[in-house]
Amino acid sequence: MELVAKTLYGLEEVLKDEIIALGGKDVEVGNRVVTYKGDMKLLYESNLWLRTAISVLIPVKKFRFADEKDLYRKFSRINFSDFMGVKDTFAAKGAVNSDLFNHTGYPMLVLKDAIADHFRDKYGERPDVDLAKPKILFDVHIDGHACSVSLNSSGAPLYHRGYRKKTGDAPMNEVVAAGLIKLANWKGDSHFVDVTCGSGTLPIEAALIANGIPPNIARKSYGFQNWKNFDQQLWKSIFESAPKQPKRDLDIKIIGSDTDGDVILKARENIKALPLGKTISFEIKDFNDQMAPEGKGILICNPPYGERLKMDELDELYQGLGNFFKRKMQGYDCWVLSSNFDALKRIELKPSAKIQVYNGSLSCDFRKFEIFSGSLVEHKYGDRNKRREPKRNKKR
Image (cartoon, rainbow, N blue to C red; front, side, top):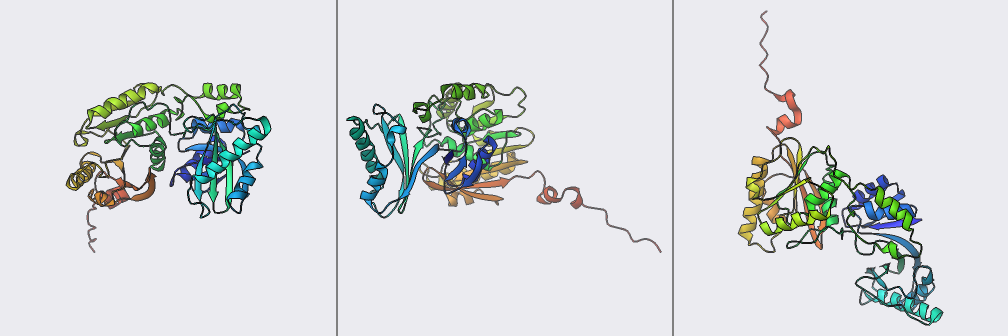
């Protein structure tokens, strides 16, 4: 069975590695998607375990079409009774890149009409559309004259983890947060610090990774649970076998801090829905007062981009981050996500890596700053570059 996992720009390779680790076969990377082969068990596991997937689809039909009328004709050839009943609510969502349509939402309306007409002709009734919480969700992708129709097994996007009850301003998408952690190659074997944590998304996703707990362990429902062929026993066995307790031997610290006490309270509230125990410490603290846990570690932060701060305040914030890295984070890899490239320059450190990712609709740089203990020469070459006693000429 062909499966398609949708993701965000820049996270395709990360998602590919996740799918391979989960047992996917014939894995191929596309633009914001990864295709692979698997059975129904893998479909259920993908929804529970994939940290960087937005949704998991099963392709129903792929075809080419000439115009709007031909699109309706091709939609009408699909036997929608195979996937839903007349009493099931449904919706169609997707992406359209074609000059054939003045409005990108129009093909979804065409599909809606084709589904309604199918059931009216067959049963004399039309199923209802429910855009908010449909039982059956179809995904449409159109590129030029090519169209694919898929069943969305996830329903609501997979970044709706189920644990976040409260948020601050501009909360980070959970898929983005998990993707950043994966891009930074953090595997839960060293300390993790976020000094602008807001309502806690980055530290929470880090704690789930460190403890080997599925990202969607607190989620209550998926689209596939409304399907005609839903295997309740198979899903129950997959969910019950998933880890639900923090590791007892986890010898690292995960710290989230912020100057805003209200968002820290929200972060503490959010982790109550997860089996993380005391894995995370959320602190009301200015980053200048934050001490790095001793040993190896990583810092990932998502400071303000400038929407709610004046330019001089923003410059001061990013310059302060750079100074803080140099003073307090020696021996750590410090990663910063921002769409404000001018502000990033104020950190005044040379990044060792730059990765383009999207946070919502904003194109951002995810930059890595290696903060060495000692000099750069010592870090690169170790003892070989320590000063040696000059050689003395042997007496002849």
